[in-house]
Image (cartoon, rainbow over all chains, first blue to last red):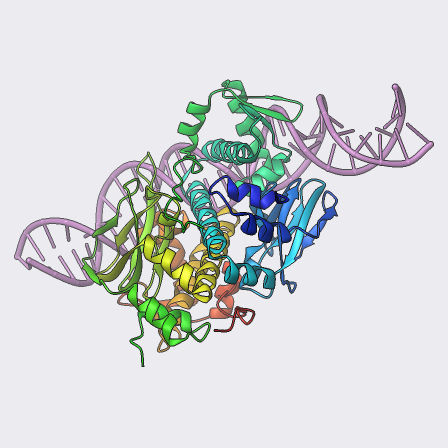
Length: 244
Length: 244
DNA sequence: CGCCCTATTGAACTTAGTCAAAAATCGTGG
DNA sequence: CCACGATTTTTGACTAAGTTCAATAGGGCG
């Protein structure tokens, strides 16, 4: 038996991992660090050589534009691999802040190198994961570039929902978003005021409901239609990966 | 001496490659295929097992939304690695069309697997490249989500310019965009009409000029400021990669 | 030369942003 | 456990950026 790490557990959902592979991944999480809500984990333009696995809580990556506006690039959930940009850039292209109290596990990029050298199958998985993130980005790009405010809110909610469900089987039709409407707006390129109007409208139409912070998706099919949303977590195909 | 491939040449600009590595990469380009302008290389939702290296010409990836509008996800230039999404998804999440007459080199994803297994350093490079694309996506995300039409046009032009310059040293301050204003609009989430107004305005302000299709950047510094643009091709740091 | 695609321009219209203020919630210290 | 201050949500009136529609003008190519 091998201690399972948060991240390995996540990857193992896609492809069975050998004990050696699991152990190697677990080593990435040897140094858990607690961070408080609002704490800055990485500041844009600062030198970075570390990546992180998020074990608990929520983290966001974002940039601030010269006029002060913020674009949230991605919201991270437990099991996510954060900060892969530091594998290429010595200065962080984006900031990282904890959206809730969280536990992150930092490790040096040289650890990634060793992982890639010693475990080709893990290398492949990381490569795939990175490609999956790229697709998630393009989905959001299409959302921001070509869909209405309502569509963006709908697809954003569905995306958060589906991503949370990857690691939490207890979720069926509702979830704690734990984001302010301002944060939602900064994710999908809207003002908080307009996000509010859209949420309100969707609530009145019975598409969603809210009870103390929890969001209930009442009509998933219709939401997918409104948001032009595609769940990418289905129909992944990793069978072609090397067998260990 | 080893035959250099387009893609290997590109990677070798970042990190010196061994002959064996170059040869392995060159094998990816064994089957060049000519495609005409407008030809569909990959259709969304169709089963795919192939990736491509673009050797010549221009290709775009895009999606069409239910209302018929199009979002161009990325414009590809010679030396680019296209379609990495098919490493995870069996159905293509995006379409690929040639923007000009082009030469693409398709290869099966199993070839990628072998590459990852046999050449850890190449695996690392592919991983990095994928991360670089992710950062490029986040830049565009911030552009679409939080900047004005003029800023988007400015940063788009600069991005195209800098990417072309990576492989073409002869470019100093002007380039052939070879995109219609409609295609520009579909890339940055604007209508062709509004793209035209912005280009026109920037021309009147002396920021850019145009002579039969060619775009001249007259005031790069000011354009970067307007577009909140960061050139990501500088300050890449790959020194930590395994030595071969 | 005529056709088709692209660029350009103007006018009217829409969506989302801005500003401001009130109401509701949350978190914290006492 | 409650009160208070701070944050977040909600709403309305007004504004602005970008879209839509439509028509004209160029340009390239068979």
